[in-house]
Length: 244
Ligand SMILES: [Zn+2]
Image 1 (spheres, helix red, strand yellow):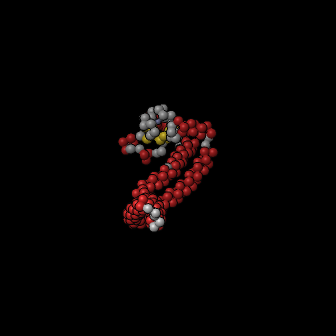
Image 2 (tube, helix red, strand yellow; image 1 turned 90 degrees about the vertical axis):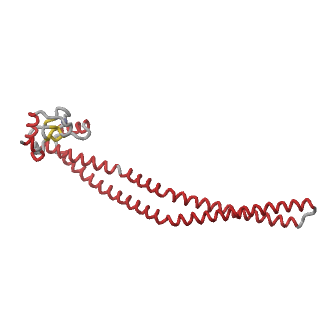
Image 3 (cartoon, protein in one colour; image 1 turned 180 degrees about the vertical axis):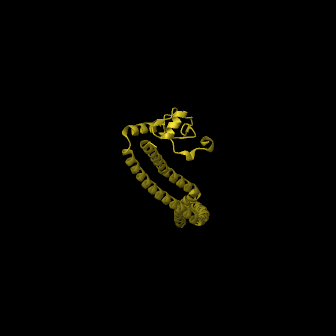
């Protein structure tokens, strides 16, 4: 094969490797986000339970304070009862005492119910915690694997980029320009292998004369249909029919 053509073929191989590596690295943040999303979904019920538990505890503290207030008021009304001066004041004090007692009883019922809820939530949270923690550890391990993979891929990418630059510097400038223009116009594929008489990029049949010349590998020839630079790898890829 023409040495310049062989260099272009090698250059395209490196460029395609670079593109594949860049794509592989670029999807990692999406994979990470998906992993976190799955974890959040998995832990959603648990986290909701934990926040309900906190709310219930807060509510419990408030009710205890309300109860304490009500008890203080009851003590005050009982004290007032001993200092009433007439029947009206006596009736009023009794009414206050009655209301305070009812409030205390209602608060105590609410507190008991809330304590039951808290107990249930505490038990459920405690039971689910190991599972959630195990899942989190698994997610963290995967994230660490992704980070290692990105490091490895980035090293490889840098190595191939350097190799590509070294190779590009040895290619005739006009040919390199032609290659780069085709890369832009043809979605990164500037060169196409000819196999069984067809261009493997656009699948069109190559004229017999062009095919024969491409097989000789002496000149830089292009596909009539897609304008890509054509090359031929060797007889090993020929099918038995076309070889016959
Ligand atoms: Zn073509």
